[in-house]
Figure 1: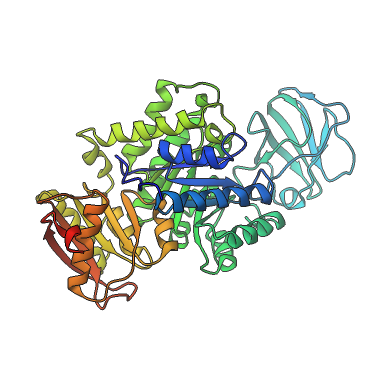
Figure 2 (figure 1 turned 45 degrees about the horizontal axis):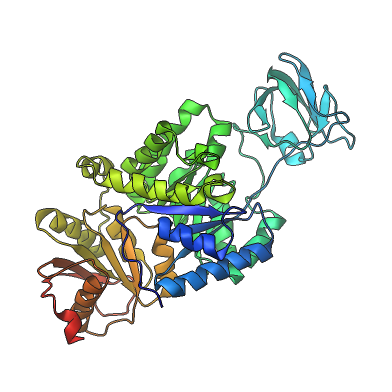
Length: 483
């Protein structure tokens, strides 16, 4: 076995999407060594066979480096599309009338099929329809449930099967299509660590997915619909994590509305102790260029200053020409931001008030102790990961070493800010707990001779949700010789 890769020189995590540019065992290992902590499988593209091969490669790499590695399967969600045209593309002129209906015939410059009765039944005069990622904007003027007449507000050329967005309406459509249910079954069979749910409009969408997952893995809700913002706290309560899917948000909202919403979502997730991923177009120019623009670097840095748990590469790593360089750039930006003396103040701009629980009180106390006295790491023992999430919510100044007997928990922690998970046998008494914490800190280079550790655990040992103990210890440096 190769020497393990020790903790990164940063606390924010890097999530990278796999695709044709990165879907080989060799590329996956190179990306991991370049700084990727977690891998995303986009179920909108690729066959199950290819995704299964990637899972196999990641699990083999996990054994090789001796570290848990996180896998996220991102479900496609419903894709609403228009039909076809007789002579594409057609030009929709500003101010023209254009009809969407259920007729089973090819379209022209006056009409096209919209094979989604649920949309036609929901739209009312004054509502907006967006075609082709928002390039075409239509305003509904008349509807009868079978067709919708619109006025072209922003025109342009349109061709077959372009996407439809309805930003002002909660559509009576499930987040899970038949394809998604098949993909979900496949992903669960592959023992992935996270499921990302697309097209979330309301908490009921998350509840439906939770029932199907039945506790087999963790659930991340993608915030990409304006309707989800209105019920954000309810969605967060039912989710294990959230993603700020800025690309889709940017289609249904004005571009200038997305940055403040990003901050709102990150802050709301932080307050509830839910990991939050900021995604889409972070280093977009690196699809074709070996270096990003300065604006892109600033954008990534802003997400890190806001307190995001993870930052994501999409097309940059999936189909781009420079996936390794993109991963390296994410790693470098994160390390530089976290070395900024002002970072601690900025990342704590969001106030996280502890719940009235012993576990939250100990998490807040650990954060304050690490601020007050010099410590090298906070060590927490956990079986479910809840203690680690509470600790990470405080954004402590030192790494969070998470010791767990549960490999699934260790893998899920790959999206959690500052957390360094280690799979190890559970402890049975206090002395064993302290001795193991010391050995692991030295072995994984999270402490050295003379360093202090803050150790948190629950008594009785091995009981989920019982965090009730905090202890400060100092490393003598010879603990590994004694083991």
